[in-house]
Structures are given as C-alpha cells and as structure tokens.
Image (cartoon, rainbow, N blue to C red; front, side, top):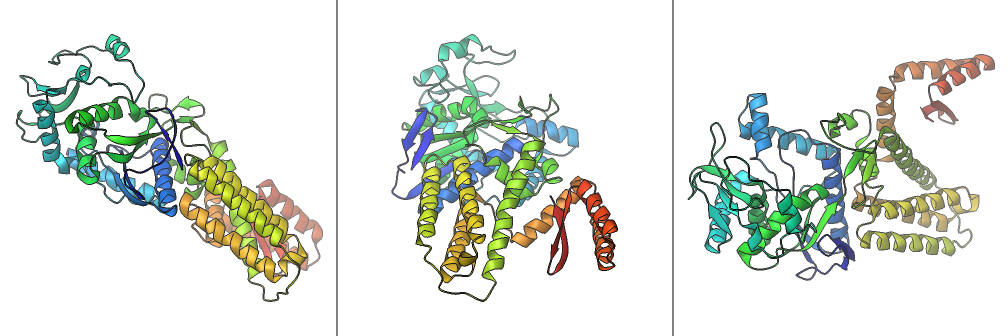
Length: 485
C-alpha cells in the first residue's frame, strides 16, 4: 500500500509503526457554524481511508477532535447571545446530524479541547523547561520558532521568507514575529482557565498536540486534515510536539485538496459559501458523497450543480443495475447452461484493479471507474438470454452484487436498497423541479384509461406532456411506472 506524505512530497510504502495497527488523528471542526462542502470533502476522504485500512486488515484507532474554544466561537457567541459552550454544543450537534446523513463513521475517540486543558498546560510547561517557550508580562506564552531548525519542512516554507511577511501586532510581546501563541491571557467576557501564567485559554495549535499524545502516543502513524491546515496549524503542531517530546511526531502527514465553487475558491466574502444542509435540500446524501469521491483526494475539486447532476445520474445507474440483477435472481427457473468461466476471470481482473487503485494512495476516482466497469459487464451479461437462465449466470450475478456491497462498504455508498434509493431520489427530484408527484400519477392514470379506451391520440399527448417535464413512462406487466429520464 502506498500513501502520499506531505513531508516527503512523494508516495511512500505504508508501513505502520506497529504491525497491522494504525493510529490515526484527523483535525475536526471548529464548532462555530454549520459545516460546508469543504468539511464534507475532508470528512468523507478520511472516512474512506479508515474504512479501506480496516477492510485491508489493519486495526485502526481513529481520533477526530472538536475545537470548542476559539476566537470564532467567542465571536459567534456574542452574535447569537449565547455563551461559548452553548455555541460549540449547538454546532457539534449539527455536525453529527450532517455527517450521519453522509454515512460518516464515528471516530473511535472524539475529544474536545476544553476537556484537555490540564494536558495542554503540562505541554506548555514542558516547552518552557526546554527553552522552547517563554511567557510575557501580560500572561501570554509563545513558542520560539527559530529554535526549531527544521521549522517549515512540512509546508515547504523558508523561514526567511516567512520572516519578511511577519509583523508584531500592537500589544504583543513576542521576541520574534514568527513566534506563535501557546497560551493566551484572558480578556473580558471570554472563557478562561487558571494556569501558572494567570487566567487564560489555550492557543489553537496546542490542543491537537496534547490530545493526540494522550490518546495515540508519540509517534503515531497518520495525521490528516485539509490542505489549508498544513500551514500554519500542522507546521506549528509538528514544531511544538517534536520540541516537547524530543522525537518524530507523525510518520505520515496527509492532506486533502481544496474545494472550489464554480472554479473559484469558496469563501463567505465571495458569496459562494455552501453548507452541506443547503446541498441536501436538493440532492440525495449519497449523490453528494459519490461526487466527493470522483476526484483523487489530493486534487482540487470543483463543485457545481452540473457536477452533482452528473453524479446523480451515475449513482442511479449503479442502483438500476442492482435492481435488474435482483429481478433476475428472483426468477426460479435455472439450467446448467453453458460455461461462463471467462466472465469469472473478467470479474476477478476488475476486482484486482479496484484493490490496486485503493492501495495506491486511496485513489477513489480510479476505483469508481472499476465500479462502472463491473456495471457495464453486468448489463452486457443480462442481455444474454443463455446467461440469465443458467446456474453459472446466477452465481456470477450474486458475485457482482456481493462485490458491489463490499466496495460500497469501503466507499460508504450503495447502502440503501435499490427501491428505497430510487423512490427517495424521485421525491428529491420532484421537490427540486417543483413537480407534484400526485399530479404526475393522475396524468398517468388518465393515460392508462385512454389506452384502455383505445384513445391512443390522447394517450400519446399525455406521454408527450410528461416527457416535456423530463418524465419517462414505462409500461410494465405490473402497470405503468414513471421516473425522471
């Protein structure tokens, strides 16, 4: 298995520190607002990594934290006239609601920053004792960046270039503009904790170092997060942790790429900030999850309604094939028929390539291509009458369904029954297109009555009217059924 390490800037063979046991930490949300499409991508990416590692036979201990004390939370508390804890709890609850809909597995351990203040204080004290940290007269504590010879190795930044763009803000008592806060002295109306430096609260970078060390030990295998966290957050985490513990902090650093909206960077100032909740009013959660996996996790991902519509068609195609397979398997008459061992080999070849794609730095984009390779094979075989009626065909169809279920477990997809998904998708598309399903059903019943009365002109007119709404009518032995074309 290969994994791309941000530090080395290349793929490396994945060899856990302890055989078959993987310790993994991913930075979670700062709980001050509803989660957006960027949060969705990062969370889905690392969810799939955990799933694939476990399916491959690794024992994974997965930690994902919540930042529940921060300037953004404090500012939101003022706006919403709540205290910081209430704001954090509100948006942590919303996080779970959103991620449950996206079929995100809960992490094994989900620590909150405010529950680990003493661990953070102890870490700062260790850094002070080793000369990497210093306190000021105001009660702030800073980390001495220049004391770390390799500062910048994670993000690839040169310390002199960083110096040229750094300034000491009025009121700060830093020794050097590059130094960052480990502990911040308290201000009026802010949450505070007692410390050796006076009342205050931890700096943002400090929390992940303290919590990862507590739950995973140092070093651990994988530290993940969005590309935007590589600098300064993860760079500072690495610096303070390796300074405090005197050894390598993390073996593999993994970062997912940015999400762009209509080819522009997503930001509130540009008015293209899209929450998961916004998207799920118009699209099925599996459609969003599928879309997020259509690009390699390190690549930038362009979000647009058009791309979601393409994802919707694609995943519906998978479910439609699952329906066909299940319908064929429900039939009772089977014969020995001809030999289809070549199809077995073709399926095994697709399965092998799927595994290779996922083992090659979790390449879900390529893996999804093999999903559709299997779907094409399934549809091709279903068209073969001798295949459909043979015992060998029955076994192959079961193998295809089992394979899709196995892959779906890793990708977090294809988790609904086919009929449930199609019905839910139809309901969502009706809402999105302002279509009343009862009125559609009424028109179909009128069409059926017209056909019964041999008024084919009226029946064709109704069918054309429905087609104008993007609706296709299928005449089946069980009666007329409809769906979006």
